[in-house]
Figure 1 (cartoon, helix red, strand yellow):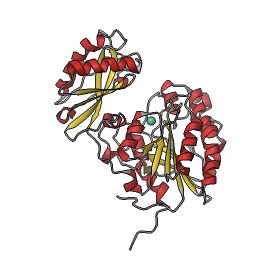
Figure 2 (cartoon, helix red, strand yellow; figure 1 turned 120 degrees about the vertical axis):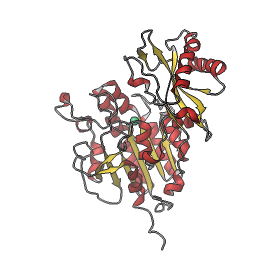
Figure 3 (spheres, helix red, strand yellow; figure 1 turned 30 degrees about the vertical axis):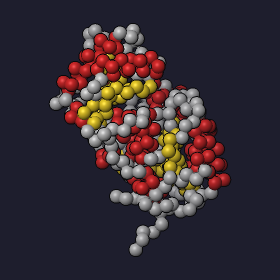
Figure 4 (cartoon, helix red, strand yellow; figure 1 turned 135 degrees about the horizontal axis):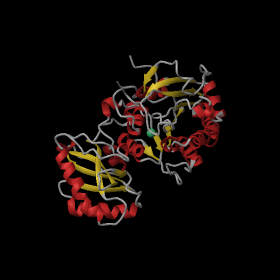
Length: 398
Ligand SMILES: [Zn+2]
């Protein structure tokens, strides 16, 4: 499928809004409503009234409901075709260019108890500088056939020969408070040996972390450039490495915004203004990704989840729509990359609601909520980008 190759109608601006994990389930505390239904969201409501609401499988059947998978879908790439693993996307965000004969592993600094329990998948959240010293020591003492690359806090990358990819690994956050499950499969012995050898190195630093945990592996994904695929120049803003990596792998410009934290306190206005200024400077499409709603879901914090949605409404969408109107005709897609229900505190694979708005057409009207989308047919998530930009494709050449 090649949805694009065609420049959009001249001057049309496209915006994709990703409130990470914002979809949820009915909650007793809210009288059976979801956060999207209970939050005060007048701008969402106004956009839904003039747009089209639907439902999408952003997580293809059988794939893990990760932000890497969901956001790859949203950017218009079918994860079933293109996704090779989470670590190579994070490696791309760190500027690592994997060779064809290499595999990237995510390398967490973790805390495992003497009884083999995963006590902390984040190794006590070490400072990035402290962690860098540990990774440097790992490289000096265990590097060679593999190499260790320092990332942020507990999140690092190991690059290994491609033959090491053949293993089944459990993400450490899925083991919290439980006995660890070591990698299995043909390449597992290499990984287990390294993880055990890392204890002598990591433990020496006296932090809470006491070893590495390897998981999320994959070889470099072969993603065609976004411009080649859709005929549009694009930018994105995020505080999350997975999104930065997807930008790096697809040629979407990652715009830095001061105060973008990936947390509740992120700079909502800064992200909105980055979208408007990048579009005004000539970009055709801009992706605004905000992590706060997902973090609130993981924390089981209903108040923060509602607050994150209300921040989107008041601090992003309200002025974003005004700014887009000043630039000319526009189309907007709002869709989360998966659900992170506060009651479950983890991602689910359920289809999520989406909202598509065209500034020049009245649309069908609707409600951007789980219930508002419940009767809509489920479309594959990776087709949404084509829907967003496709309506403005010129007719195919004869
Ligand atoms: Zn996510």
